[in-house]
Length: 232
View 1 (cartoon, one colour):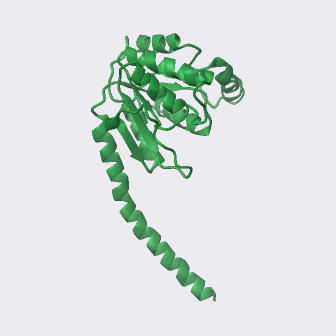
View 2: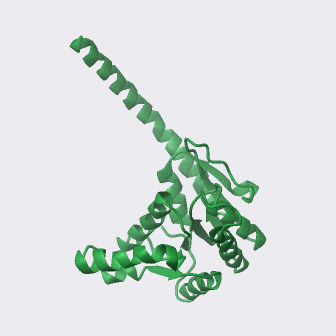
View 3: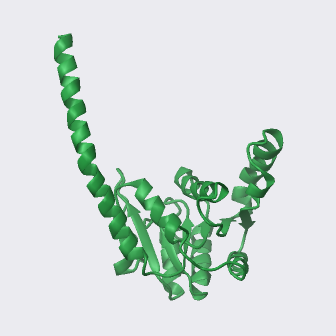
């Protein structure tokens, strides 16, 4: 019996290794398709936030306004392509007359693309890490609306890349002081002062605001001193 189990495990391991080799080509194809599509879009701002936020909710409508005002300044808007805050971001982009990009991901609960994405800018990904590269390479700023684990994962990956010098600095904006204030206080008091796990300059990467006008002002002020260009 033990010999049968051992042979079965070996066969499964060999099949997994073969699958992994072919998987490389799927990953390469996603990178190539994403690079070719996004290289043409021009300066963009990525907007992160919860897929659960419904139309009519204050954060949904705030996201529409933020994205519309950024679009009116000439920035395209990139979202995760799904519902909630992502939909609001793409809606604002269209209202502002700018590029509306969706980077959709295949998920078990079947995330669907929202209707406000430009037809030629609706991209679909199987791999989260490929999708993250597209966000980080082609966004000249990141707006973090209220959201959950996915929102924080995406946003703080960008903060880590900037902190470690793997990516040029760009505006990192948290919208909603009531929502994000506690997190910022914790980072200041626990991560910085009590543990010394970050430096004071790391916190200066993040900007908390409450209005669309503050978002736009911060982005425009940043780019009076820095060139608009791909991040790496």
